[in-house]
Image (cartoon, rainbow, N blue to C red; front, side):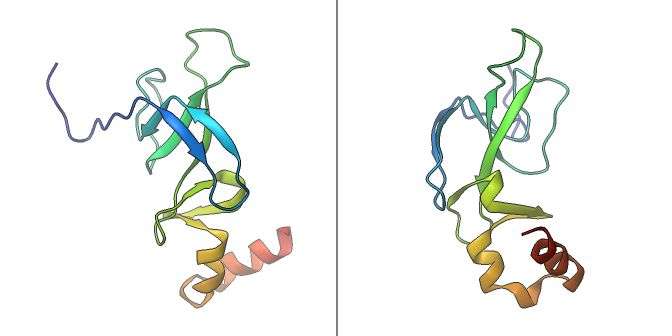
Length: 110
């Protein structure tokens, strides 16, 4: 098989959210899970095969990603994806660098 830099593969490990301490095993980290051929993420995500779906259906659960500022592992609940993933702490510390509409929406949903 030819190596393609766009087909980044990480065959799994342990994920722990740096904020809420969610701990879960992941099956893949990257943009194109080999077990879900029709999915292409816009970021490197920590992904697990959906334990509730039928085998070989290619259904996945995204656990989270790495914050683009602090590089810490962060779950989907403790972060936001806006062109890149940002943990809530980095978002708060850099609130002046985000559009007002985004910040207003985040405040109104909490």
